Image (cartoon, rainbow over all chains, first blue to last red; front, side, top):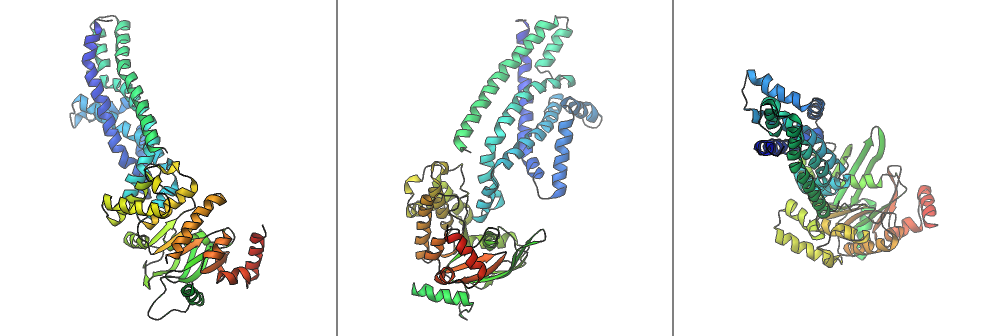
Length: 212
Length: 269
């Protein structure tokens, strides 16, 4: 089990890249998606809702296969990029729902108060609503990031050499499975536990700062 | 006081000096919600420096009328003029620019304060000045400090609004609205969420503001405030103005039966 660890650690960097890459894509793209989801413009709202429901309703592994093998006929994406894009698209849907909950949790009087002062919609959103909503959106988003770290293991099916892929390789070379996969589990834990702790810290910090 | 008396009679009678239009004119303001008439063709002139109190039972449309003045509520039809100039071309379809201009001239204070909880008291008062009037941060914060001191809260500048009492929060909200140099101030039941003692602090600030010549429209359940401070008291019921006049007249010798009934119910408590 111990001997397997250095080989597994070679996959750690890749796992971290997929996790952070797809989370960043999601964190960024979820902003316009959440706004579209809350828009007064009906087609925009329907489109956003449809995206969120469809993407969340299908397992991430399926998106990965579609993106890599399905589109492989027309564009060849490097496996790592395909993995980041597929999980990024899924993160976008989940995080958009967290953002929406955060935005909606802010009292309606805040929009009115800002409107009566003559603040523009953009100023109202970015300077009044978003800083308050983030306290609500952050905890579920942080747990989602930890979940994403584990979900990133599905990238091994398209040949991205992450932790899971390294473990599979060792196993296929004839090594006994149990210690190898246990060791892989430990490597995941080494990253996910500190991430969870950090998420909780960030949450407490933001809560005391914004005092919602 | 004598000036106010003259203003009041002019306003009440609806006669206006030809050279000088009333500062605020509402003409046939009509508002419907899903087919229910909430305001039926309300017309009202308010002169510069006048303090108008709106009293009446719940559901009379007082708050809705007030909210039509800064377009937080969009009237179904009617005209809103400031200094004789129409503020919105098509009453039911205000453009973004028209709203911005209107709200620069009209400040508002809410029952629920609506302060921003995530920033300090000082930033609450300074931020809108920076974003709406384009003042520098330094300039805005100086002005904020000046106004907070005026409402007696200079020492709360660095605190979060949640650390202040309700009465203090409402005085901060008044300072925040005044910081944008409005010409007209709207107060929507400013003391209804406060216990009587804290409400008193807010009313004192409002009385002082009235004395400086600010034009004020106040929806209130504080009859003694309406009676003492307003130049004109407007009694509304069922989406209409039933009666208006000098407070001594409306409270002392109401002409309409509906007004009498309301005042008896309220004043005998």
